[in-house]
Amino acid sequence: MCGIVGYIGEKQAQPILLSCLEKLEYRGYDSCGVAVAADGIKVFKDATRVKALGKSLPKFGGTSGIGHTRWATHGAPSQVNAHPHLDCSGKIAVVHNGVVRNYQKLKEQLISEGHNFVSDTDTEVIPHLIEKHYSGNLEEATEIALNEIEGSYAIIVLAAAGNELVIARKDSPLVVALGDRENFIASDVPAILDYTDRVIYLEDGDIGVVSQNGVRIKRNGIEARCEEHKVLWSMEDAQKSGYEHFMIKEIHEQPGVIRNTLGEFTRDSEGSVDLLEMKERALESMLLVSCGTSYYASLIGKFIFEELLNISARAEIASEFNYHNHILPGTTAIAITQSGETADTLKAMKKLKETGCRVIAITNVVGSSVSRIANQTIYTRAGPEISVAATKSFMAQLMVLYWLAMSYSKAETRKLASLLMEMRQLPSKVQQVLDDEAKIIDYAKSLAKYENAFFIGRGINMAVALEGALKLKEISYLHAEGFAAGEIKHGPFALLGSNTPVIAIASQDNTYEAMLTSIKEIKARGAPVIAVAEEGDEDIVEVADSVISVPKVDTLFSPVVNIVALQLLAYYTARERGCSIDFPRNLAKSVTVE
Ligand code: M6R
Image 1 (tube, rainbow, N blue to C red):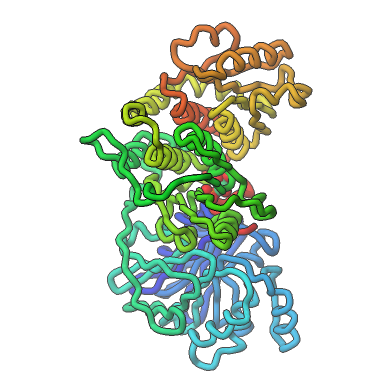
Image 2: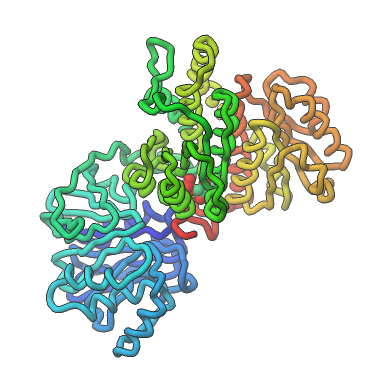
């Protein structure tokens, strides 16, 4: 939550800060601000989006500065609560991503010592603490201040002299990006892709000084030699490239995402699945922890593991798992999180490690916090996902889960080879769904007129129903609920009527007949039904009002084609309703608070 940026170099800092900040808005976008060292510190901030701030912003000269885009935790989104925050003298400015848990106590102490506070934020104690400890060395003062802070932070400190930026992180992400006689700091890589592909990932506890010509990082009290990494994402990856929204671009990127994952993990020539070193270890039981869309990927993962490995697998919502304790000895845990920063998932991982479990992380963000906790990290190959609604990252997670299950599977080679062959056809099957977009647009236009919708699925597609409902509600603000189809008659039926469309996933597997029955029962209550069904299915045409046809695939892979249809349905419904699709209200891409 919240994105922070810093720039120091030869160019005017202000436009660079604004362009970097715009790329971080997926982290929070209720208010934003910049501070530039230009004859003292000039701060400009407001409860608005970055583009709007840029338009109203007076031009400050100055070649160093910091910026922030906020997802409010302490204090409402307002100009006064927006970052950067200043000390009393106005000579020290700070941007912060994280939470200062003991801010109330620190604030009272600082007020009693004569410091004057203007905001409701936890962050404001940081510049005041630095001011209190400052005696000529900004890094030293910051280090002493941070020692008094309990909580999480990624911070950038700017002083009026403007010749250096002090940076530090603990439990919130921060990268330093290296340019030619200029350096950048950002919460995440997409911010700096326009400028450089050379980055250093900071670790928890790091504190450092960034100047125009150098970066000095102190790790565990001593100067560290930090490894420089080359970013594999390109500038185009973080641009809309002619699409109206990032979300629709990301939906359309999915065939490529599947291809990349398959290329990464399988050997073409032998038609076999490339094995992980961990194949050597026997898998007794499996626990998947995650939140939101990643949790729905976990539910599908549970199904795949049980089916292909014949072991017992559990999928748990991380925030719930954190409050109960039953873990079987010998459990292998998989934490799934596209951002790699979700607080609940990180907490669950720590708990699992403490109880002796081996934890494998699946994430899309290199250098993110999960990789520091996990025993092993598997990176998905989705490329940067900017839209708050997860689409292609979900697809990449599914691909990794399929590959993992096939790696471990003791199923006969012929069965695995045939599944692998099917997997290779998935990009073209997904493309087929995308090519049929026009029909889905028509259905979305009618769905957009309703205020409630139900999604139902059975078996492996129950999770797809939940994910379809989440996609629709988060971007179109239409109230949507997903159910196991068999459950709908145990209560939700009371809400059915002509104003409650039901989206039913009817895959050709052992659940099909039961799904037809559910649809008939729903129709008998007057609710309109849109079915997502296999092409050529004539029975479904008889019972549903409308049908979205998807290509035939093995049941195990049916979530792949079905979810793309539902993503498109959600996107076009939200578009019809004129919603802010990439940045839905009240949400943020990485949820770093519990
Ligand atoms: O980064 P994570 O995968 O851990 O994020 C988990 C959820 O916050 C996320 O999936 C959220 O539900 C998305 N907005 C869904 O589109």
